[in-house]
Length: 342
Image (cartoon, rainbow, N blue to C red; front, side, top):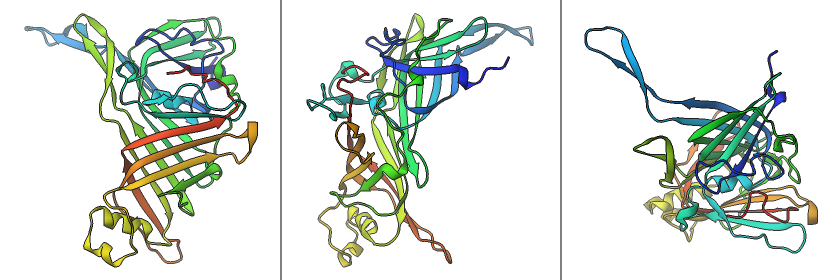
């Protein structure tokens, strides 16, 4: 019998010690990423090294190098907890005495023990007589891209690498993928984009933001499995496309370089960079039913401004950008962080 994804689950939990499987990878504390989870490019290699010998045209034997794995997870945005895997640290207990509760995350740039946050990913699959459970440890999220467009849900694509894995046959009886409790699948209709200072950009056609913490595994002499991890420059990049009805973004581009042409355009108090870019997803409800995820980027540099003009077609502007910093806030009815406080 050929088994499909209907017989499988994936879930994750943060590790308290790099490379040691999270104790709660099975049970109520394991988490899904979101709705319609998909795992692709799950690859594990031992980096074999074929060795040859003088006097023979054939391979003589093999040696084996570093063990390492990688995978990609795609899902529909429903909850904010995965941000803790891509370099964001929570501020502790949420604010509020009753639902909705407010959670806040910021880029962790101070605590060496929290950078980067490793996690355990488990993939379980029913397989007839002997089920297949692969538990990936020492997982590091390298980047995550959040994107949506008109008529679409908000999708997230997370790329990660992992240090090692174990193979067992005991499935989680109640996998996290079966229930995304208290969460909703966000769509383009839930979103607004503001740049800068609460000025909503109208008629946005698509938006994409990539969070790259550029993590890497670290090996040492005496062990083929990664023993630690580190990260390089945290990069925040993105792009959005909207109707070209005013020259605001074009002028912002001029003023970043203080071009002389900017002197003839509407005045702006900002140069070099824009102060804020805010992407908000809000289900529009109040009280305990309120669900929001707000991504606030600061220190915005616009890379370029691009338009195409064709007969009988709308004129859109494409704006790629980069940011220096970011915070994420979320409101929901969950009284305690299910991922565990950082």
